[in-house]
Length: 108
Image 1 (cartoon, helix red, strand yellow):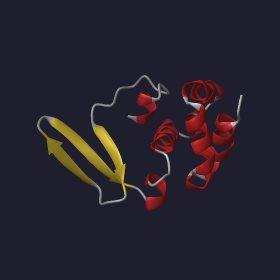
Image 2: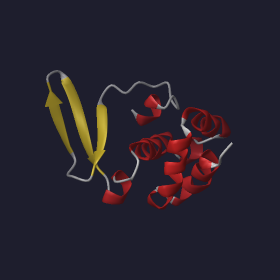
Image 3: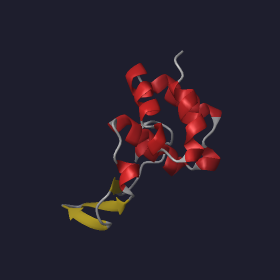
């Protein structure tokens, strides 16, 4: 869902999946099924909600599929404030994301 919201993927998820530091479970709300997926607290608690969204989107796209086009798209899409927040939240991101996040956060 995060990758779709940031236009990194055209796939529209059928089921909403939210990351939480609570237990994994599935919740039914009306006809909608929502899956809560457990993540370690450091993966869901960032200073910026946008950083959390970017981290989730890159995780869903996968290390092998993060390319120049997707990184360039994030550079254009994110505001200067959001890009600065990425640097603050960098220690909370997986190590493989660091070079991409630094490039995105570089002022233009």
